[in-house]
Image: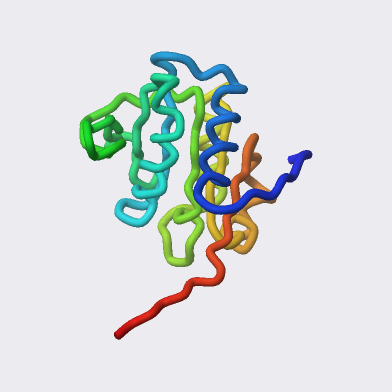
Length: 161
């Protein structure tokens, strides 16, 4: 990683992601494969997918690292991008690793992620996490991301009545 910039809010995650995807030449039909935890990572994956839908890539969600369970991500009118179709064949031009995979007690290692990225040849790799999860888990010494988006959710204000 050579360039660090600071952004804020949801556009601060989505805009740099879209710019990166455009910059690596993703076009109609090229595939973006998102790897993450079912349930917790999928809302963030769907947000990322919205940011690049106009480029017309094929987008797929892979639960954990199990490519046999890959599902298509599609635009649903009046709803947005949703993980809803499947199965999908995984052949990414961009591999996106979500930080939920690096959380404690997840059955995924940094070596497995490193090897997965390498298995896809010349595919680029992006990491998207919150609260320095990849750094805290020690993944950055093994996994080389072409793009790393590390967002902070702080403060979280909760009001009840």
